Amino acid sequence: VLAGIKCSGSGKAVKAEHTEGYKKTAKVYFCCPNCPKAFAGNTAKFAAKANQQLYATGQATAVKCPLTGKDINAAQKVTINGKATAFCCGGCKGKVTKAEDKITLVFADAAFAKGFKVVVEKK
Image (tube, rainbow, N blue to C red; front, side, top):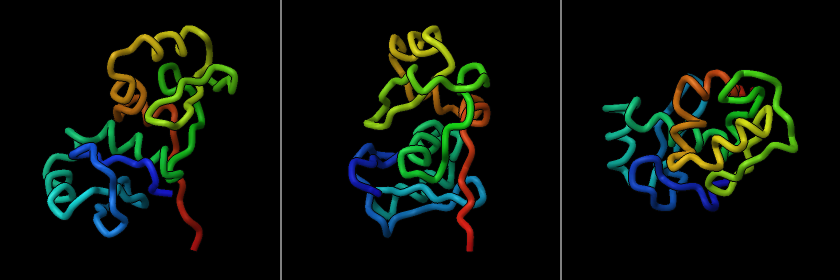
């Protein structure tokens, strides 16, 4: 699950033993023991990358277009950090494709709340 996942702080490969709880039931993975401390001290700074990591690790699922909140069309996909993300239409797909910072556009807190749902593990 963690293969190819990058640290929200450093951008390096993550290690399973370095985590921080996030969005009540999820956790964000980091590369070292220092990054979780930085994340906890300023979650907003790292939110877009952390949200993208939740999606990439299967802790969040896409439920609507993160740009518009409309139903997603599986044919309108853009791959972001190795994970395909679907949008409602060609217009949104085009906007994301052209964006210099796709992660912030698609996974900033407002867009994440519109388009994704954190999966709650059943106990």
